[in-house]
Length: 201
Image 1 (cartoon, rainbow, N blue to C red):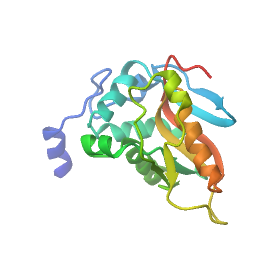
Image 2 (spheres, rainbow, N blue to C red):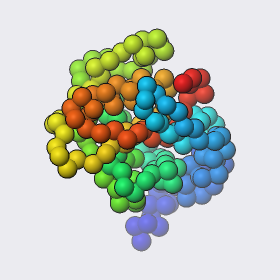
Image 3 (cartoon, rainbow, N blue to C red):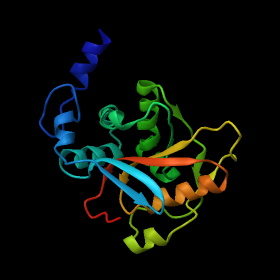
Image 4 (cartoon, one colour):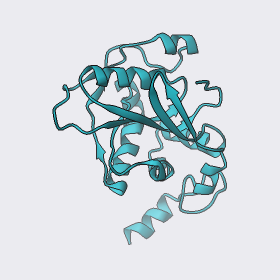
């Protein structure tokens, strides 16, 4: 009964094609283009699709506070998640969490943890400092020290895979990987939902 009532009160339709029951259908997500694998200062990173079309609109809506997109964005990433990995979501700033009501990357990671039965670690935290948004490409690439670790690595910690929404310059992922590796963790790679069209490796 609740499922039927929820569908009436909160209808879901694809942002790209208006298909019922999904905020972003697989066909519209795939229409953005092909996946991409890059190497960032020695870090292997995989991006599911280009940040374009309906996928771009979906991520923008999600980051503006529409948490319903989390399920469909997790479905986009799911085929590319190895069931042996432990994801480390790139944390957002407290100010943006307060504005949205949730940490968007952590939310998608938790859904992937449930659906793929993988580990998720919140070992990474934001250090005090400015957010990435609004910075120029040069400023993003030069910025370091965005993160801190909540603890150092132990002898039984698994290999980690960083997880983020959009690969823009790669600087955030490289900085996060460096922070974790300095604390003794092994970072096997990175996964993002999308990559920015102007990204150059």
